[in-house]
Image (cartoon, rainbow, N blue to C red; front, side, top):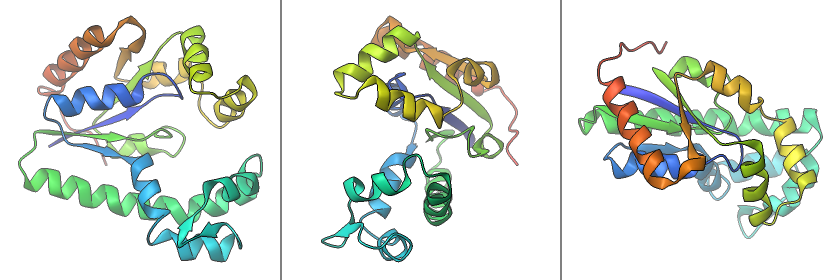
Length: 198
């Protein structure tokens, strides 16, 4: 089974690209969704122990956790040390299940793929990208401020660097059908590519 890593900065079209892979019959692992599940299950007690007072009704309350970790590198590292191994376990289980089901390819949708060194766990990397002005417009539509965008981007590798390191780039600024064609082209290309993950 060929494993594709999908990444991209906020509002660059990564979620739409993931959906297009799924529509082509490719199983997609959503790391963000895995974190959401963990915030309601096995990570709750561990996070509460590390950050007292951030859980409510048996779940991690992001509104309470956020202020404790945003802009606080040691706190963020502590949180990642709890969450990343659990997300990785879920990812391994997903890949086993996809391979057992006979999938020829699977997608790992991981926002911080490069930032966490995840590119070594995949056979090819796809980056969803769009011009910076398109990104800003999409962020504003979501109700985020430019300050919030800047804070998020400060934690992420610049888009230009991601594109440089990618095997494939999906330009999400030219409409859904153009993106769909790119996804189909990628799937055709990876069918003949060697696996390289470690």
